Amino acid sequence: MVRRTLVTVVVLVAFVAATGCSESRAMFGQPDDGESVRVGVGQVLEVALPSNATTGYSWQVVEVPAFLTQSGESVFEAPEDDDVVGAGGTEMLRFEVTGAGSGVLLLEYRRPWESEAPARETFTLDITAR
Image: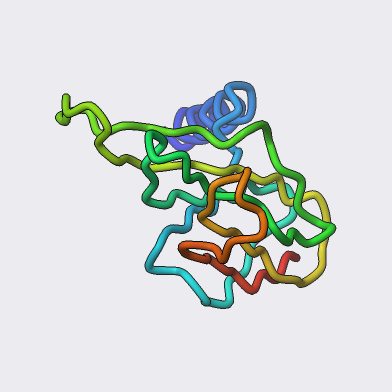
């Protein structure tokens, strides 16, 4: 019985490793604005913030620590149950934690072509990666 349990555990660990389920994510949103957070090297840091793509506003990366690498462009997701044209949704930005360190992630909600105008909103995270 003990041998069967041990074999089952070994098979499960091998399955998790083979399917990539070991990737961990650190998810943050509007309630985390201004917070100090810790993440691990190798994690994916995700920031999901309210946004409305039809207004021309989007979240712009203003400051990013050297140990974070943005993964692709931001992605806008409209609510599934809202068929209203022009309705807001959520904008998701992803960053890979590529090394250890500490620094500030600063995002601004603005129209990209209005670079001189003040940001409509800002979002900051004070990040420590280990």
